[in-house]
Length: 47
Image 1 (cartoon, rainbow, N blue to C red):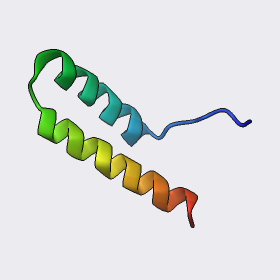
Image 2: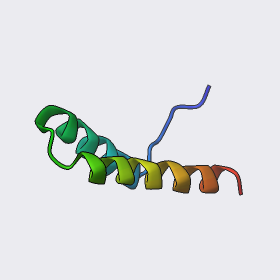
Image 3: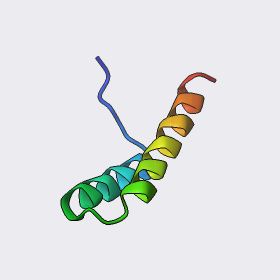
């Protein structure tokens, strides 16, 4: 199995989500960042 190499956008989204989970601030923005990163990864891998 190949090692996963998350995109920079995915890493930023993950950090934003973690902070939102801890603080309760920016939850909607973090959710949007995660969705966008997931969508772009899906497009990248399903060329």
